[in-house]
Image 1 (cartoon, rainbow, N blue to C red):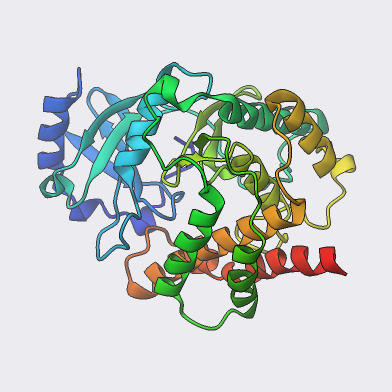
Image 2 (cartoon, rainbow, N blue to C red):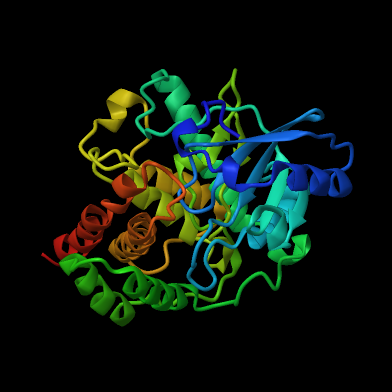
Length: 352
């Protein structure tokens, strides 16, 4: 997990019986020795994530948030399953230690995984790095995305991890429902997207790959001393889908405005920064994965902006309901409007 300090202003550890947690870990994790303490990381909007300290070392605990939850949301058991399955793949993931489905231990389902000593970069402009390092890190991300697209789910016991085919149409339906369930006001661009997307679905959805579902820079861990991605985190939205899904989502996030919580690259000179242009990244991805762009590029931008806006709208609703997992929840939730506008502008500008 990140080396940044846990956000002690939002620590939820007093709600956890550390004695019960320690006893459970000692009986389910080889070599584990308590007592334990918990400190909440500032990262992680959906599922609270903690640094778990014990006599046997440092671990990471990730659990469902407290309170009433939407059905199928916060699926930490799916996260555990997919990262455990990928342990012997080329996709870098932390080692899984144990999953607890007994709510009585901490108040909700959780899993314990390896602590990775690494850096998290939040700004895709990467101001901390030099131009050559930025290019290296971007090309590594494309290589991981191409690896995901090329991975055979059945070879890792994941053939039943999601419904094959029609991923995009099912996602449009799912996130429309999720958005309606968490609406807190009128968002005109979301209404346009909810109407437009089902009428413009891509026709080629026959290919099936493992989809991470939220592949962004801030969900990656980078080695503390070199430009090497050592961990892909936050697999809550993972499933089976079209191999182009993760790459196009990642590209959409890079288009975000600079003034949003999850900053994008909009308005920046990528060449001066050493960051490849969008077309160059698309060409590299196609070469590495052998995957062509199914349907029009504007559709994918609109689709992912719609989906992300629905996700952050859920964060806003949890904040208003008082069970958000991060102090930055309201800032994240306010992104729903700008992100939906980004998606709808991709449609309108293409049609002009």
